[in-house]
Amino acid sequence: GIIRYFNPAAERIFGYDAGEIIGRKLNDLMPSPHREHHDEYIRRYERTGDPHIIGIGRELEGVRKDGTRFPMYLNVTDTGLTKLRLFVGVVRDITDRKKVERRLEEQEERFRRGQLYADIGTWDWDLESGELYCTERVGPLFGFAPGDMVTSSENFLARVHPQDRKNVRAAIDAALERDVAFDFEHRVVWPDGTVRWLLERGAVVRDARGKPVHVLGVVQDIDERKRAELTLIAMREQAERANRARAEFISHMSHELRTPLNAILGFAQLLKSDSSTGSVHTECVGEILNAGNHLLELINDTLDMARIDAGKLKLDPETVSVDEILAETIALVSTMAGEHRVSITHRRWPGVFLYADRVRTRQVLINILTNAIKYNDPEGMVSIACSLDRNDQVCITVTDTGPGLTEEQLSAIFEPYNRLGREKSPVEGSGIGLAFSHKLVALMGGCMDVSSQVGEGTTFWIWLPLSTITTEEARAAMREEPDPSVYPLEE
Image (tube, rainbow, N blue to C red; front, side):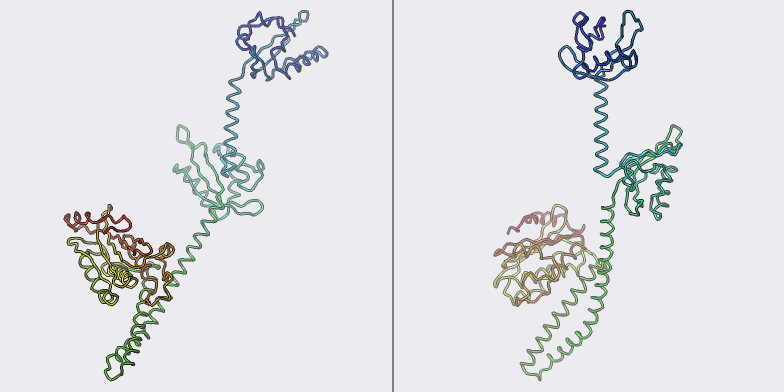
C-alpha cells in the first residue's frame, strides 16, 4: 500500500509535491471511512488473489493536503509483475461532474414537485414507434398508481370518455395535418369508473422535411374548476330562465292589473267631476285617485324593471339638449316642489347636447328630483349643476339639503324595492325608482353614483355621453364647472 510514484496531475489534484507523498500509504489520500475500507481491500486481495476486488473502478472521496474532501473516481490495476507486486492507480477528480449531477437532480426534483403540486403531467409521443413517454404524474391523472399505467396512445384513447373521443381525435388530427397547437378539455374514465376533467395542451415537432415525428404535451387535472364552471353555467341558465319566467309573469300580471285599475281610475274621475256629491265624497274620491295613480306608477315601474332584466327594453338614442330636458323635468316637478316648500336652482347650459334616449333621460331626472324634493327638509333647496368630465361625458349633478343617508343606506340605495327603512314614513314610494334609473343610465352608455353624509344632504351624479354637435364654446364653459369627481360637489 506504499506510494512509489506520483505524477504531476496527481500533484495538482491532491496538492502534494511528489516528494511529500512518495513513501506514504495510499489511504493517506482518503478520508474515513474510505481509508479503512481500502486496507480491507488490500487484505482481501492478499488472501484470495482475486484481481476484481481491487481492480474494479469506483467513486469515493479523496482528501487534499489542506484537508478538503472531494469526489474522485479510482481504478486500481495489478501490473502482473508478481515479484514486485506493483499496482497502478488512476484517479480522476470528478468534482465538476458531481456538481452538474447535483444540479440536474435538483432541477429534476423541482420539476417533479412542480408537476405534483400543479397536478400536471408531461408526455412525449413518438409517432414512428408509437411509444408514449410520460412523467410519473400522468398515471395518477388517469386513475392509475404511479408507474402502473401502460403508456401508449391506444391506452390513452381508451381512457378518454366515449363522448369526448371524437373531439380528442379531431384535435390531434388538426395538429398533425395543419400544425394547429392543441388546447382542449376532455373527460377521462378511471378504472374504478370515476369521471374526471383534464386539460391537454401541446404541439407537434417536425423534422427538417416537415414530417411530424413527435407530439409533445402536458396534461393537467382541472376537475374541480371545470365542475365549478359547469355549476355556474347551470345556475346562470337557471337564473336566466327564472328571470324570463318572472318577466313574462310580471308583464302578464301588469296588463291584467291595468284593466280593472283603468276602470277604477276612470269611474273615480267621473265621480270627481260630479258636482252634486258632497265634500266628503269628493275627498274619498281623491284618495281613490291618489292610491290608484300610485298603484299604476308602481305597475309601470315594475314592468319596466322586468323588461330591463329580460333585455327587452328598447332605447331610442338621439341628440338631446341639456337645457331643454332640464327645463321639461323641472316643470314637471315644480308643483311637488311648491307643496314641499323646496326651491330648485340651476343655470342654463346653451349648446350642450347629450346623446341619449330623451324619454328615459327625463324619467331618470324625474326620479332623482322627486326624491330630492320628497326627502328634503322644509324650506330646503335642490341645486342642479352640469360639467364635462375627462372622458368627454356630461355629468349632471343633483344636490339636496335633506337629512342625508347613512353608510348602510348608501350601500343598498340601488337595490330594487328597498326603501331604506322608510316604509313607514308618510312619503309614498315603491323603492324601485333609483334602481331602475341606475340600470337605465348604464343602458344609455353612462353611469350613476351617489354620495351623502348624515345632516349634510345627498348628491347624485349622472354621467351620459356627450353629443358630437356640442359646441366648443359650450365644452369650454362646462370645463369651468366644478370637477364632477370631487365629493361632495363644491358650490
